Length: 228
Length: 279
Image (cartoon, rainbow over all chains, first blue to last red; front, side, top):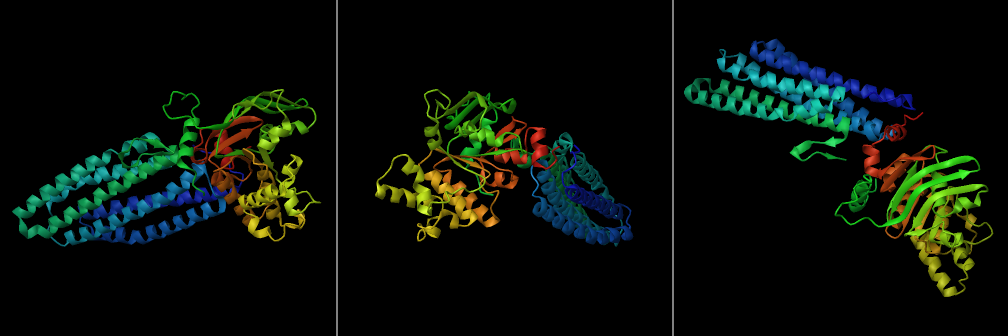
């Protein structure tokens, strides 16, 4: 919903700038995750290094968004949908920063894996990656388009991701017993899976914030929907 | 923000659904029941068909742009508007179930039951601080000095002014600062022990410290009084009130729990007004 212009033009500008920074941060986070995972699948250390380097810019954006959000709260004391948008933007930035940290961890694990012969079991991670990324993209879309239905639909998809992670971990642990020489490699893959599972958790948080921002409805923690 | 009493907020959330009368929850006690109230100044309709219940021992804030009928509305709650020539009222206002506009009701008694504090503090300039507080009692024939002294101290304490003026009661009321004068007017209103306190932008002429004192006072007084306040300050309405009513061009657009109005209003006009996107 595009609201009519605020009586203070500077407020509209500040809100637009905050939103743009969130969008920039989500684009960088998405790119960082893609680079880290491509670095893993394609055994490309340069991509892994890029993913790790992206993290600094994302950290700076988190600081910027927090600073801008606090400034908006201080200067304009927004209420209603404006207040929800500012609060949601600040919470999104925190989740995006943690997602980017997961990308960094994945990239570091991938670089370690790349030092050894390839493990075909890396393919166990691919469905998790696809699931986590689709959740991430949809959750950010739900925030940007203020699409309550899409946000709501993201949340239950986390269960499938958790199940994929459990299943992959089981298989990798079995392989560790069968092939102890590759134990470190399998362990690194388990950690990558855990990172993707956490990306899904953050995507769920973002989807929940998107629903709150758009409809003032708190859908966290599986409770019955309760409006403020 | 002062945290509103959760039970009051819960009642307000129920009150936003006027059809939910079958609730098993006991109904919140109401001080005012306003039904289909319209007011004309000559040919001009100032408020239009307002129906609104005001809950006891809670703060209700009336917000809206200038000229929307906020002040007219609260003046109807103690018949102050009758002091304006060519005023006509239609509809009913029940105070504790009694019709305020019944022909056998004395407006002077209504105004004693429903006290009022105005935008600009207005202590009587020729009276001392002490005389200002007890003037209402004196006009009602109270002569017992001991009783007057007791009520003087009690009212000034309730208005959080006693400690500041107890040694200066003989000084003119106008010798006080603006914030103190406003609290003096609150003490004057409290001295006659009203059931309700109406406040018409009580802090608009005060600095932030004096405003904070009045806001804290309002929060404390609601345990004993029903308070209806008009304010242009949205943050103040959010801080001090349990319920908020949004008026626009004489109509009640939305009424509900303040937490609901300021986080998720139901009406687009309310959202546009409180977020600064009006007009």
